[in-house]
Image 1 (tube, rainbow, N blue to C red):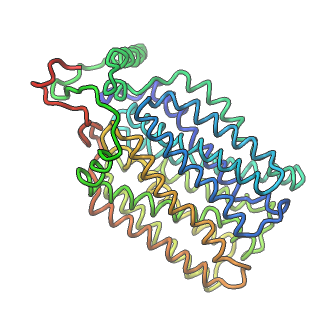
Image 2: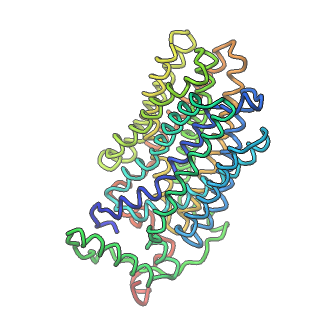
Length: 466
């Protein structure tokens, strides 16, 4: 798989699986706009909790489906998790009160949390190693394409429909996109790496043969796989929780610290700024509900461009240097904006510009957190590694909307929110330093070279290669 050039097959993987982040970004932007707050008479803290309950749903979904994707495969979960999301998001648009909205947001979060684990695993296992960094970062960055779409949807619906209908119609946009993607996913194969380590060698070989035949049909000559890349594996049983703990904290303790730090810091910062942005614009700068989307759109585009333009350098300059640089710069820019915000030297436009610059770098860094966790642990626990680290990061981030909602209060003082911005900036700088010290130089390396599969055995003892 690593020796393949970039082909139509890889584009189908990116399009078919990468939509999950678009849907997630769309969902969070719709909640961030807070159009339902007026109808249900919700205060800033309750609006923040609407975001938190969605994030808690993601945590539960990741925990449940993360273990399933390692035991029953990546592909089997694609339709299931997407269907759960479609149901939750669609029903949220039909909510009759605040409590119903919270229940359906939780269900939508369940689906998206499951998507993260199965799809990050599959993308890394299907994409050639020399493209893995930029592709994974770019795909994770498409979250912001969804956010931009959500901003446009918010602007259009709020200007065409009454406030009580606008937010409801917005919640139906994601399910419509999801229905289209279900068809595309039917043609994406199961990961041959997963098949090989779970007793399906014949299917793994057949899948690889079909992919290679498709590549050859595009006029590409494939070189034979080097003998030095041969490894022997045996069927590996489901990893028990005790063994999982040993892998994380005994075999790979430095990698565990690295993954946890990156996930926690970026999650807290993003949820803090993203979910409070609309209220900051309305409460401190007097922007109307209908016009918030105009300010969010460039912010989302900046976040989208960061991974797309910087992703290449994670494969060339290297993981550690780029992670450190993106985390550091984003933190420093946010800290500067906090000072200017406190001094009342910013307008809604200049505040948005600072957000755009800071998160141009933070978006690439945040995407690299998912890349890092998915590639530095053995294949047999990849889905669970993503799920557990994602859950811990989201648990930290899930409190951010409520905390920052409380810091804003009645918008009479800027000092509490300034302190909140300093905390977010400091966390990102700490995350960058940890990545510089503990990071893994995984650029251009096969996943099996980054972390040996648990099922790997010495060739002389293997009996025969599989």
